[in-house]
Image (cartoon, rainbow, N blue to C red; front, side):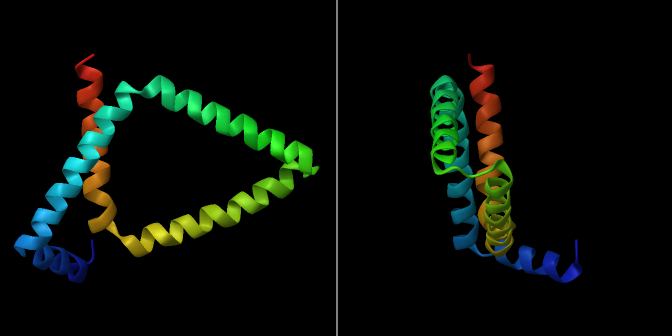
Length: 109
């Protein structure tokens, strides 16, 4: 990690308001992960229905898979840029909490 970035993160974490926000984000991610495990079958069914609807829409429009994947590539590139802009302080606590919540949800089955 770049020393300047490390100093910036240390300075941000030393502020009480930032620490409280990161704790709340972590707890939100924890709850999201735990609840996601509990409703996993519904989430998988939801994703399957969305995917089927998407493929039917593509088929009805007469698009080729290559055209669809090129459009998706543009969306993925935009999502990568957005994640970079948001940074680790925004996404990190929620992601870590989400992963820990999934583990807790799987262990409490």
